[in-house]
Length: 134
Image 1 (cartoon, rainbow, N blue to C red):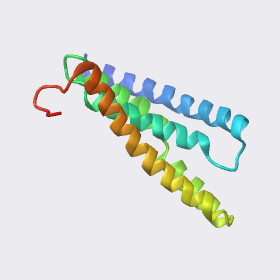
Image 2: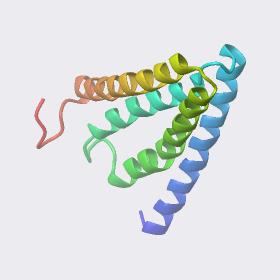
Image 3: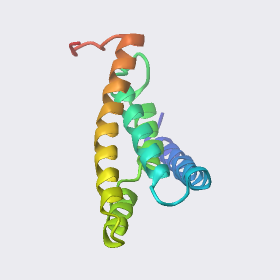
Image 4: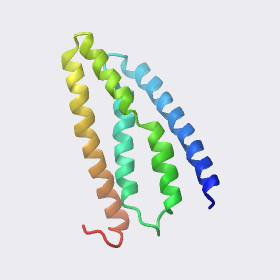
């Protein structure tokens, strides 16, 4: 695959990731309201899980270009660290300290747990790729 085509696919995947993020945010607000930023939490945890899973795939499962398209394009646009920061500070400035701290704790703990779960699932289904231990 030539580099220009890969760049175009990264851009397309990024557009899909951004639209997925927006749709998730709207859906979570309609389900849970606007007190806690559930949409941001959900896409961040899902993105962490996916990047953990992708990190375990070797060339035999996914090419380097495909991993770039998925990780940089889709997941890069889907996950929302800047929105996480704004959501947290907004709640902090509005006096919702417990919500702000819960947001930080949940994003960090669930995010790290999701990366570990993605790695575990990849290793269970395909095993470690060459050069990597268990």
